[in-house]
Length: 330
Image (tube, rainbow, N blue to C red; front, side, top):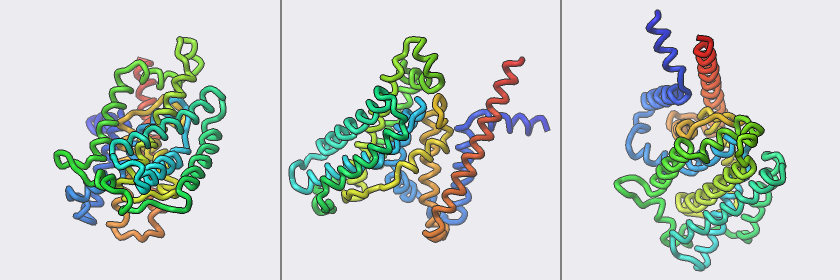
């Protein structure tokens, strides 16, 4: 009995461990129902098709850590993606690196503007990003001029998402490098510690000499950079650019973070947790059609699974807090 309690204590000592257990259970259950799910091709396609959510989830982690939120990211993605698509369509640019650089630049400006209004203007993040959500989506429609960029007009850019290095897709490599960079940032840099400090207690952080507004500005700007990058990647992955592309994707990104144990009030969360949350969402999206669930019911099932995982996460956090209090009493 003591051994079983000890094992349970170890399993609930980490949100990441509990998420990995959920992932294993999901994969086994889906694999038994649909063996094709666990093939290398299926897994590779799943990562490629969900790389946008995964990349933006780690950016949203930074925003949530400082106690903010940004719901303009899908619109930033559409704006940058549409801009790149139209430039390629009209032959203004032909270089893939240049297209990605332009998208990143647009995203940087978009994120910077949101950050300035939030950090320097002291406007609530949800209000500021909501306003910019409509502005950026509107700009995407304006530059599209009721047109869209099809695969035929994208030139070699559409092939970028098909290319592979060492058997791994180009866009997946980009996602891996971004996660490594953010892991280093959050784990071993002063800036990473400042993000946690501002989200945990802004007043205490400012008293200790941290410029909280600059930290918040950085988090929103970096989120914009990643959203802009994802705009370019989405155009290449789906071989098209449309003004309404990935409408509502911000909800999946926020859900991925919440599933991964990132606190909506700031100060708590990890890069690994954000990745595992996004991976769980990707597995759910891939699995629902495979197991024969009709399209009309998929959102309902997806919502139920997300709620169950979040409840498990909350129980794990309570167990961690309880164990921490017991250790302090000792």
